[in-house]
Length: 178
Image (tube, rainbow, N blue to C red; front, side, top):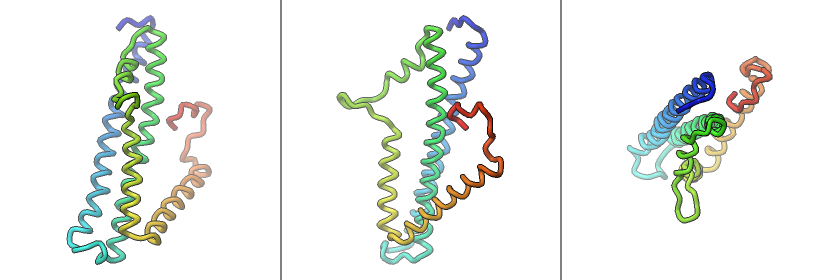
């Protein structure tokens, strides 16, 4: 590839490598957390002869498995967003330099007829299916309790992050990755 500016070539190569590593890490961590989230209910239900027999602690463990899955989804979503930011910059450099690597890769998205398929939509479907099954197994009170605790922790950490300096406050936070 011929670049007009050596700094731009360096930026492009580093961003390209970073995006590949970020994607590998995103899928590795998502797969691990997703597996753990399914393993927890599997271990809990292994010894029981029916869902009606499981006790409170088993139901809580199944609900916890669902929370692990939500953590996996959040991790995937967060790094998916960062990847889009990086790819947008790579496409900008490609447009300015007249090369087409990312654009070619993005044009090969799978289709069924006129409809494009997006993998993250499948993950949303998994979210809904897992939520429905968890709700059916553990019941409404336990499910809502775990979701309420999750929302409370998210809110508490969001408030603390504004006062405790967890979030670096700079003018350069418009990049979408911080």
